[in-house]
Every structure is written in C-alpha cells, then in structure tokens.
View (cartoon, rainbow, N blue to C red):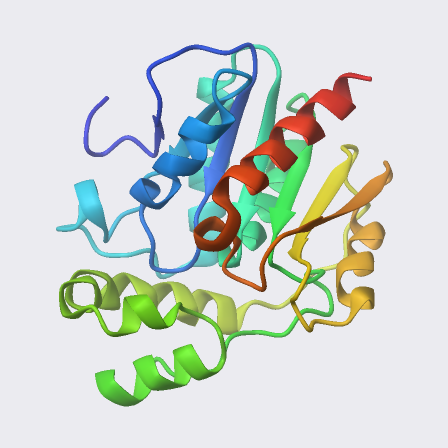
Length: 247
C-alpha cells in the first residue's frame, strides 16, 4: 500500500468480508487500529486514508464533499472482493452513508450492512458548531464543550498541532452539509449509540427513513466517544451486524 491509497487494511489477516471504515472528523485511519484488531478475524477493517492527516499529512484536506464522496466510492468499487460493509463513526458516519448512496448510483452491489455510530439521522441530525474561523484555543474549548472531540485530545499539544488543519476542514464540510432526499438504501442499517448518550431516541430511529431494509438500534456502553470508551464492544456490534445481514 502507498501513502496516497485511499483505504488501508488495518490488520494483516484476510477475512471474507471487508469493512470500509470512516473515523471521526479530523482523524486518520490509525484511530481505527484497535477497533480493527478487535473485529478480527471475523472481518477485515479497511480504514479511510484521507488527505491532510497521517500518511497524507502534506496534502490539502478535502474541501468539497461531493468530490470526496465520488472519489471514495470509486476507490471502494476497485477494492470490492466479495461481500463488504461500510462503517462510519461520528462525522465519518455521514461519509459512510453518502458513499453508500454513491455506490448505488454506480450500480454497485450494495454493502451487506451500513453501520453508523454516534451520529444522528442525516436528515435531522445536529451539525457541529461553526468554529472553523475561531482562534485555536477557543475552537478546541468549544469542541470539547459540545462533545465533538474528547477532552484528552484537546489538552494534547502534539495531537492538536497535527490534527487541527484536517479537523477544521472536516468540520467545515459537516457544517455545510445539506441533506438531499433520495430513495432509501437497499441495505440494512445498524445504529450504534452510547447507553448514556442524552441524544433523544428519535434521532437514532430517524435512520429508518434512510433504508428500505431493517434498521436496528444497538446500544453500547458509554456516552458519545464509543471508540475510546468501548472500542471492543463497538467492534463486536459491527461483526454482529455483518453476521445478521448473512441471515
């Protein structure tokens, strides 16, 4: 794999199902490594390797959501070998959802399942606060207050320094997102959310409008930052969603 590849397999083993996975805003695919290990050997997690972070740090972060989605959909089409699924965490859930739509437009076999975590239904969900033009200290404080990033990230100077540019770009994409009505997806959807997340249940149930197949709610231990709070449990939920799709 080269640094400019859009998806990396995050574990060495090969499983019958590839799960193309999208981390939260500002994060790189390394955020998903422990999650990928926990999901093995049932599935192979391929992490999104977006410009502007980690192996592609010297590249400009994406500024156009439609172009980004089209590029990632084309990359996934080239990587599909048999059954596959899509997983998106926090802001990455919107990317996974829009990629699923783009794959349908291409006539691609639909994913076995779309799994989203800590992200409300895209037609009604709250957008992150518009902080992209704030000074760094105020931006990070606001993002912690709004539970967009963990407090641990905001106090880590090195993490702030290497992730801030990509985070600002990603948040700009999310704040500018406008939902476009389209036919429901032809794949089942699993919605993972924290048992202690105060988000109204209707925000999770709203995903039912986005799929013609069953939509399952899967509570996970924690509040919002499920990869950090219960990564192994979240991985088990993804594996179960793929297995349920088999049935």
